[in-house]
Structures are given as C-alpha cells and as structure tokens.
Length: 203
Image 1 (spheres, rainbow, N blue to C red):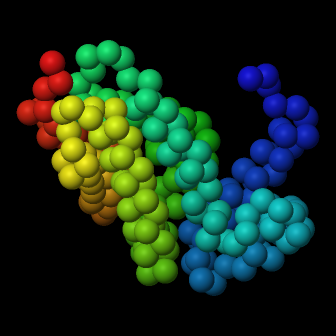
Image 2 (tube, helix red, strand yellow):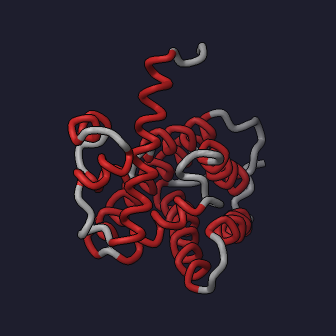
C-alpha cells in the first residue's frame, strides 16, 4: 500500500488535532461540561468539520478502536507454526501497542493517560468502555479458538482473553491510582497472560 496522499494526510492531521483538543478540554474542565463547539474552537476547526470526523464527542475517546482490534486479530491469524497460545495472545496485544505507539493513543503518552482517567471516572463513559471491552474480548476469543481448534474450546479461550483484558483494565486503574504508568501495567498483564496459558501445550 502506498503512502497516503495530501488530502488523506490533511484529514489525519485534522482528526488528530480534534482528538488532542478534546482530550485536553475533557481533562481540564470535565467531559460533561465540554461542548463540541468548544472542542472545535480549540482545534481551530468548525463544528461541521468536527462532525465530519466524529459523530459524537464520546466517539473521540473511542477512535481507532476497531482498527486496533483488527491489528490484534491479524496478529493471531499470522501466528508462526508451533506457537504457544499464551505467546500468540500476548503478541496480539504487543501488535496493538506497537500500532498505538507515537499516536494520540500511545500508552506512554499523557493524552492516553487523560483518556483513561476519563473512562474510569465518568459513569457514562465507564459503561461504554465496558461494552466495548466485552466486544473486544469476544472477537479475540473467537479468533484464538479458531486458531487452535484442537487445543482450546470457546470457553477456555474466553477465560484466557477475559483474564488478560481484565488484568489490563484492573492493572491500569491501579497503576494510575498509585501514580505509575499504564505502560507498566500492560507489561505486567502480558507476563501474566503467558503464565496463565502455560498449561495449554500445543505440541
């Protein structure tokens, strides 16, 4: 696939500017208190331009989620022969993290930390986050059981994926409460995923 053209690059930059402005306003003055008009003004675009990129202000906080999930699913599908289930699941998470690195969803960045604080503290966003988490878990578990049909069934795949996602979510909250980073929590959760899958030997 070739490099994006100038039009596409401009769209990407505008979308990123809107997201960054929204994150900062949400963090500074509160999610419910921030309007689309304020976000557009901070990003130096019109409200109409905002809606060209995001259907709602909630959508700003969940942008690229589907694309990131696709990266994880593709990683599972491209597993090497003889790979261990725990390693495959952990690598799918690493693939997502590599895709996130350097962008507004970078786990080590302040913007992502601000987004996570909002998702964990605003009741409506917390509910939306859980719904999306369930959908991600279902898709990843289905991909894992399809990749290892003779080793793991749907229920065990769901347990493994749910354990990892739950560890990431719980670890992220605990790390942020303790003043640590979400990246540190992710690293610990991935190590636990490999350990949890240790008894599932595909050889």
